[in-house]
Image: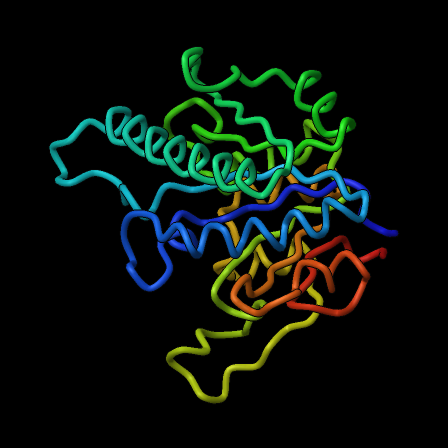
Length: 236
């Protein structure tokens, strides 16, 4: 098995389903069932979840950026707790850790503790992003993937990979099956923000962009089937 430990980046919107906002718990259960399936194969799974189903940034230009980002962190925590509850319903051991201390509802993020949980077969969900403002949850995913020595960062999206232009706008958009970190940065492709891509490039953590809505895609990736787009260094 190529990927023994993965970091899965889930958007907040993916948990909202057709509702677009809030949480569609049936959709959450559907996602968690597939994650449990790959965990049962012996894959160690960590998750970073966004908060876009609750908060999309400053409500006006006068709002303090730090305040806005902290509100977003609370949104990611709500999503992390919903995922954690779904895993418990499925009898999958799970731990929620947050980058901001919230001792009544979750563990505070400690790298070594997170790795211990993973080694014991528990799914670990990271809320609050990095715990600091001015950083996206994409950057948090790249940071945590590097900290826990993940074999790959899997970015779940609503599109089946990276295209040379927006496939929703252009019928002639071409899918890219493999691309280097530098090409992603130089071509300004909307994969992850530049900080996240650079972090993965510096430590050679491959990024796999795939469609979370297609059944069994996670399992196919773990089985090394060519799903979505892989971003890696050009010497691989």
